[in-house]
Structures are given as C-alpha cells and as structure tokens.
Image 1: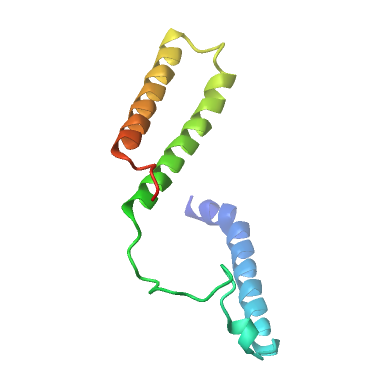
Image 2: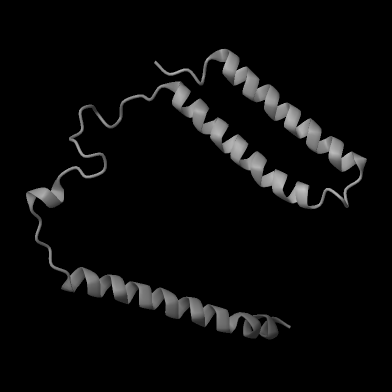
Length: 122
C-alpha cells in the first residue's frame, strides 16, 4: 500500500527536484557571469524621482491604513457580487436576502468610516 503511494507521487517529486535544480543552476550562472559595474545613476533613487527626505521607518497616518482596508473590503465585495449576480436566478429568496444583509453591513461600515473622517485628507 505504501509503495503505491510513493509511486503515484514520484513523478511530481522528480519534477519538483528538476525545477529546483534548474532554478539554482540559473541563479548560480547569473551570479557568476553577470557584470557587476555600479555607477552613480544606477544606484540613485528611481522609484519616485527624488531623494528620500525622511527616515523610511517614519510613521504613516492611520488614515492611510483605513483607506487601504476600505479598498480591500470593497474589492472583496465586488468579488462576491459577480458570482452572486450570475447565480441570482437559481438562488432562493434566502440567497437574495443574505446578500442584501451583506451589502447593508458593508454600507454601515463605509458610513462609519466616512463619519469618522477617515476619507478626509489635509
């Protein structure tokens, strides 16, 4: 019984081993053969176009995190709405009402964030 278990997954283990070996080989070849000539323009800040003006460990405003959480919540809401809308004809009244309750909870959370001023920027 145990030998059949190992024989069924042997091909997958060989594939993973070969993939891991090739990835290590490619990284090693790149590390040894690549040119390593650094210059000032290559080492300069490129993400936003200007040098850093504060410590990178400075605190963010909590509103940044609130807006991020709002985005994630409403993004997930849309992800739940698409399958619900596609299966709406097959759902019963309970399926419809459960989605309405879900949307109401999200709207109450959005109104709470709005009333607390999380969306206001100075």
